[in-house]
Image 1 (cartoon, helix red, strand yellow):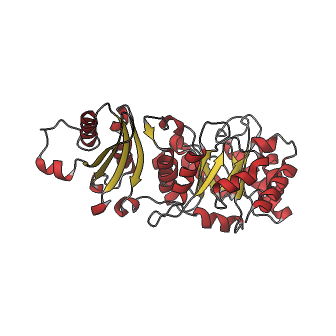
Image 2 (cartoon, rainbow, N blue to C red):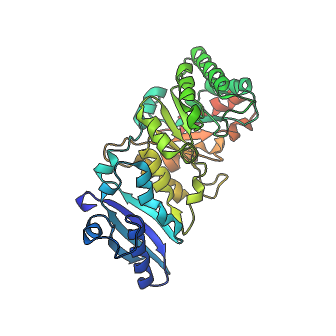
Image 3 (cartoon, helix red, strand yellow):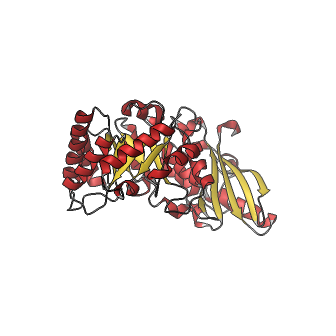
Length: 370
């Protein structure tokens, strides 16, 4: 956006150009000064209120609105940035945020991935093929049972083993015990096989327990965590990333509330850009053809956003999941390319012997890779 302004593109629903124009004006006021016209000065109108840059038809009853915002009103605050992007304006109806142009002044306040694609490849010792990640589950298993699964996945050759995002601090597998047991199981498997598997525990976001849990993760020797930014907190995720210590894998749970056909935030903006900007080294999304009704085009848009040039921000791994089938690994490689992390869980559990199922999948992945 010229002049270093924050550029925002929305799709809105309105029956006529005049109605769309009124909608656009209401949006520019609501996302900035949030006060009736006539109650603020001409200077604030010029310097603070968003500017309408373009308003074009985008189909029957639909319009594409481009506005620009002075980055100074964000003040380096992530919450205020989100408020500008889709805060009070989310309370309208028929409005989708579909694209963002990020000025350097905004990017400077966002950490981006600590490791990113290249750094994760170095940690796992994998140069070319997609990374393979397994999800240990389900909730209700004991910490010992989950650790046994971690060991099997690691011996089978998984690059990463992550907790299911529903594993928090249940009595069946308390957080501290689970992290210690699973990390130890992976370390022993690595020593036995010569592998470099990483274990990523799920980090719940209770602020009162967060510091102690981070210390448990560090003291156990874990190199990363999985977080659910919409539950853990976007600001908490950014804070975690700023420590520059841990790989962060972002889970999409709760984000589906934003993905309406006529209202919300585009998948590639929320998962592909925002999750990457706040520090996720890899971002999980649901795979086309899996359990959830996402199209291939939507998945590819997320992939592109995670890997696209974005100032100094490192690219992040796209992580298709949600019903990925082991027998279709070649298709996923063809669809998404080598700089992808394949996340699989249920399909491996269905085969019974986790170690052998993982080894077969890894062999297929290596054979299909360029």
